[in-house]
Length: 142
Image 1 (cartoon, rainbow, N blue to C red):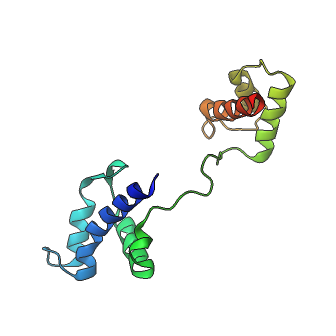
Image 2: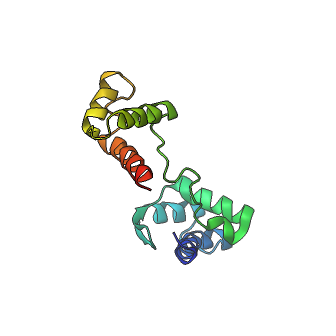
């Protein structure tokens, strides 16, 4: 996400919390204002349609009070592009299976991982294993 998109998101967040900061809302209390804004669906820049919980609004308010406007900017994930489901051992096992037989299908690797109970069906999808295999294929081509 580029800086312009992040700035638009920060302005959006600020537009929702500004009445709370300035105590300038049309409702009787801050609580009523929170109920109104958390009951709506918003079209957030770069993110699309979203609905927010009271805790999310409170977090934005806290971040603004502690860090100023910069605190409303979306944070970049430090684990972006990394699988949060598979352990390093399972990734290494997949890599070894692929190195032993580069033509082996991802589906058969996935089924072996399930059979050996390295992964659980409801926790790891086939597409997760496909992404790991695709990365391996890309690394070996370059």
